[in-house]
Amino acid sequence: MRAKGISYDTGFIKNGATSRKHFNPETVKRELRIIRDDLHCNAVRIMGGDPERIELAATHAADLGLEIWFSPYPLELTTEEMLKLFADCAERAERLRSRGAEVVLVTGAELSLMNPGLLPGDSTDERIALLSRPDRVREQIGEVSARVNEFLGTAVALVRAGFGGKVTYASVPLERVDWALFDFMSVDLYRSAEIADRFADGVRGLAAQGKPVAITEFGAAGYQGAGERGALGLEIVEYDQNGPVRLNGEYARDEAGQAAYVRELLEAFQAGGIDSAFVFTFALYDHVHRPDGLPHEDLDLASYGIVKVYEDRLGATYPDMPWEPKAAFTALAEYYRG
Image (tube, rainbow, N blue to C red; front, side, top):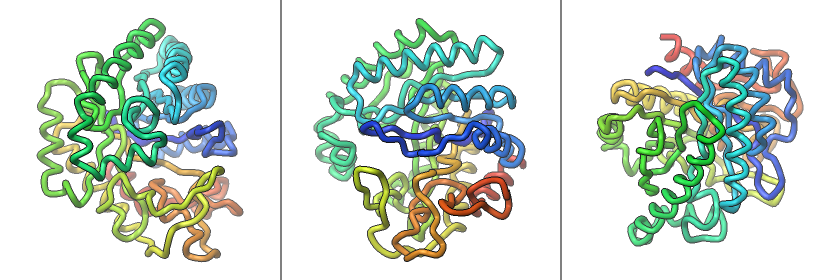
């Protein structure tokens, strides 16, 4: 693979609240250096809902020589709000590119699931629930694809007016994106139990379409059986209006399983001819590790992060950081180094 990457969360914004409460520029700079030097990444997908935070992190990444995938991630926004966000990010991404950084602008992610108006449902949960109803998906897929491509046509014209680099979109398969608009085909792709037997063939099929393919999201949560759920690993979390609160039961930690999942998918992407891959994710700061609490309080079990984040202490491996690497951290570092 050309681009060996990971995603970096600057804070997802939903209903005005951010998932990353504390955003210290020195911590960001240190984490991005670890991503380059210790994980051996040469690319990073910088995600979030605040353009200023994305630009700050991307500037540090550019200073480190990393390829930047500048990735605004709208949640529950109207089409007008999304276009305003993308136009802002195009200007910021162009500033970085004009300094000599290698920048790819990602015009959102999974828009039909994460935002209203493209797929039936008044909330993200309602829209995602449709995925468990293949009959409903088949009924809607034509209309959804038409709406998504109409919106992306407007969005891409807007961002290309302010940004001179490469452009892509982090899609889900049901959207049937018109890739003629973009420089990369990009897909958020998870292996679940339902598709495990045909996953490798699907990867090769993507790469055979003639345009460079990026896997913009893949990974697993850290509990036993999470890999079989693929993208739905967070379904074991109960939320309130402020974010994650507890797990909905007791689950066994399985860091080795998370690490194996990441390694196996990287092998499939390498064998299948994928150009770029971004593990989801370095850290989820709102899914904290509580080793001294009750089992259902350990939100890190549901986290796709390759580090477990503490809320009340620093780590041992990196004594200046409020987290500790998981087995997936080591697995990723070894794969990318090799």
